[in-house]
Length: 246
Figure 1 (cartoon, rainbow, N blue to C red):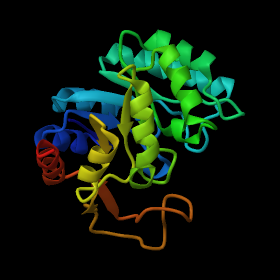
Figure 2 (cartoon, rainbow, N blue to C red):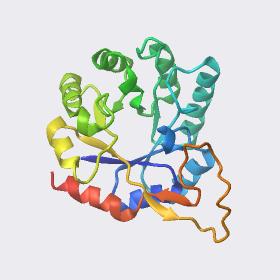
Figure 3 (cartoon, rainbow, N blue to C red):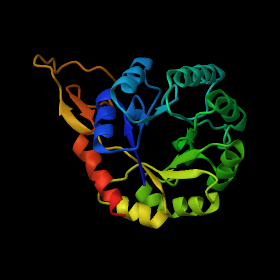
């Protein structure tokens, strides 16, 4: 079983490596579902964590129907991350009608190769998952991250099982979103998945002693100003041990 940890910090990448994860997906802005992280974060992760590194390429939160300007940014980000020596790039592009944007996906694939490519949970917003699956297989995408077009994997296991059966080893179907220590055994047993995507951040208090509680850096929908979230080594170890018992 391949354990991929979804992270947003160098600290969490180090913890994932120490805890026995096989791979990390490095993102920024997990509250928005993940966006492109900084080059500095990727360089430091490469220096400090001995683990396979997948990197999110998503210029903003929201939908996956990107503008030409956003697509140009994505092309440049894929080039940069490839030059930096990452192990995989992660992206997803849709057309206004809910189909996979095959033209732009193919263009990013060409830039990324020979790196493997994961099509992220944009897949869960497609109009027809089996149509999207066929398109991505034809394009040569290596992996799909999906919650089974449901709010969490726990609710989407039936579709994930069907996708894995139809894929027939032509593409990896990786369940992700809402996997916990309590349900990971059931998710794997019911879907037949060979890889899982897990997020396990834990709150860590701010290092600040002086605090201005009247001011916050964001919109009304925000995380706590004086709290940060880091993946603990112990959480990764727990998932690793649980998966080894499957």
